[in-house]
Amino acid sequence: MKTEGKIMKKILFATTALVATASVAAADVTFSGMGRFGVKSTSTDGAATVTDITTRMQLDVKASVELESGMTLGARTRWRDTDGAASKTFNAPTFTMSSGGLTIVVGNNYGQMYHGNMSVNNVGLTGLGFEADVFTGFDEYSSNGKGPQGADVNYTMGNLSMGVSHSKGTKSTQASVSYSADALSFGASMQNGKAKADDFSSVGVGYAFAGGSVNLAYGDNNGTKTTVLGGTYSVAAATSLTAFVKDTNTAGVKNVYGVGVSHDLGGASLKAGYVDNATGSVADFGIVFNF
Image (cartoon, rainbow, N blue to C red; front, side, top):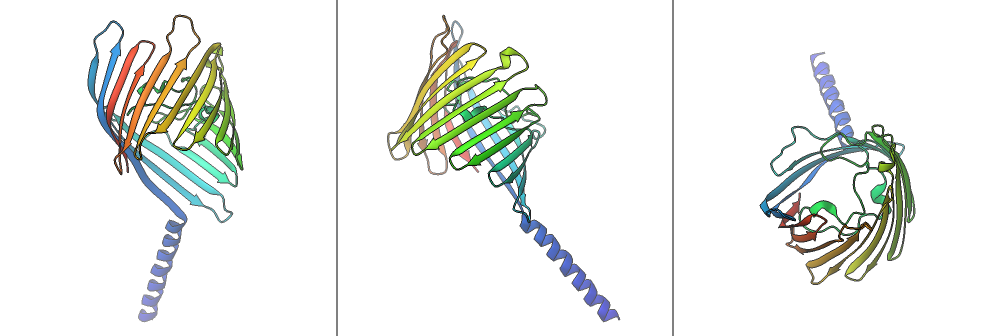
């Protein structure tokens, strides 16, 4: 009986280990991130230039599991430190459910605005204000906070993608559609906000060619119309140049220009950029790497 009891214990331990192993095999948990460091200089018209060190470290945790039906469930969260202002907690999580071409996102959801080719070609180590975006201020994923706390419903069929989103906090609704055909890509997106100031719409088109690409985007934020033209070109095997110009179509507001360079170091990139914006200029230089 003692021998039989020992055998039963071994079987129980083996069965428990097998179940545990099977559970682990069905799930996928990954840790990834990025780091960057360099120098950033900001000049404001009529004021002194400020130059300082700039740093960022980011850690992303992603988990997913595939059900027997083929449906995939996922979750992700992010920790980020920028210039020494460390976050004490991770941001609000994002949850996904995918089956075939349908994906539902809830929580710290992404929204639809970037699906409409509204971002052209940002430059520099830090993005330098992301002036190559047609506009900012709409509902989107937050790397530091809780985000929209809404839902996205996205569907992809071949080269055609479309989606709708809603934010619980701002009560804004977004929609987008995008399509690619060989070297051409098209997109449109919009946000219907609770207030007129939160209404956004954009359309964009891109063309890719050997060694580079060019993009054109147009947007309207409650009557403020913006046009951005930009492009990227590889000038050498490991070096590319990026430039853009932005016109806000507003009297008395000057156009925004930006230029940047990126050099592949083999596992990291050396980046530099300069942007002449509405209030002065900003430039940066440094190294960024992923892990």
